[in-house]
Amino acid sequence: MKRLKTNIPWFEEFLPEGILIPSSTLISGPGGTGKPLVEFAFVDAWLKAGGSLIGIPLQYPSGELVRIAMQKLYGTHLENYEGKIAYIQFEPFTNRSIIINDNTVRANVINPEIWDEAIEKAESLVDKTDLGTMVFGSALNLLLFSKTYKKSILEKLKNILQNDKSRMYAFAVSTSAMANEIKTLEEVADNLMLTRMEKPMKLFLKIERMKSVEFSTGEKEVPISAELLKEINEIAEATRMTRIPEIMKI
Image (cartoon, rainbow, N blue to C red; front, side):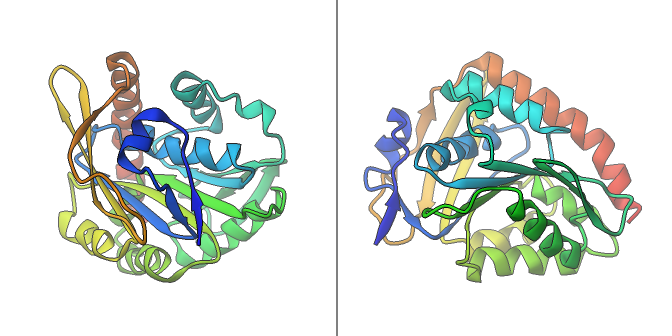
């Protein structure tokens, strides 16, 4: 049984045995509770273990902000991992996916068929590795605001979390809207983690479920600075204000 160790001290306290490979992880909690920052711990561990990454960070307008966050959080310089990471840049007003440079695909991933196409194109941009590919996505709950594709993209995400073992998956979603739909995703993910925030800007994490590994069940504070938590919240809020009206038109 293959497992991924994070080698990040605070995360090792939660997961002394690591995470099963392959498996799906869902990080869930109210908006503005630092979910992507927890998710980036998996991203960091996967890269350093030799794997390749595909990122769908809906709350970040570009991969540059992912790069900055990774450097601030874990001292990881993504520019040192050329050929190991590709991004899918969300473009709601298109019905296709296109490769726009050597590490970016632009696509309307609200459409489940385009989601698959975009993943395949992004995977063609990264190295094939023994460990395989991890797909990480944040603020994916925003996709559910589509009137046309809400049901089909929810089923798509559910199927990925429950059944797709061809890749490793780590998704972050907000429960602040459409809590019932998010609950269906929580029920099928192999691994489930919950976040919450306390004033003044303290992030707490609790692991609800892990597949085939031992884990700490207690809630603990995550040692991420208030400055960085505030920064991610501001970016997320700005994204919500622009993305939701766009997606609701689709």
